[in-house]
Amino acid sequence: MIGTRIQNLRHQKRMSITELAARAGVAKSYLSSIERDLQSNPSIQFLRKLAPVLGVNVQTLILHDASEHKPEPLDQEWVQIIQELNELGMSKDSLRRIVRQLKSRENLTYEQAQ
Image (tube, rainbow, N blue to C red; front, side):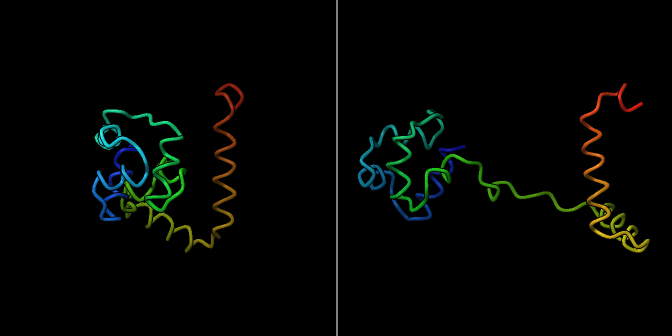
């Protein structure tokens, strides 16, 4: 959530909520409600005030940050399948072509695929 990102960035900068609000020129109570996700849709003007104080651009505040969610570890069965394909001489490019073909088939209806 956007409030969590703001709060994490503020903590990284070792700023209090009072300091951030003062430096950005926003109401401390509103900033607090954003950080606690009581308000979840801050205006772009609000974000434009916060972003430079936090040392980021507005997009960083808005867009999902992949580092917030750690990827699941790779299933060892997938690793084994890839190793077997490699042993059979299949190249990465060949496998990518197969994946693209499968993706293009997903767009077909069941009747078209028959």
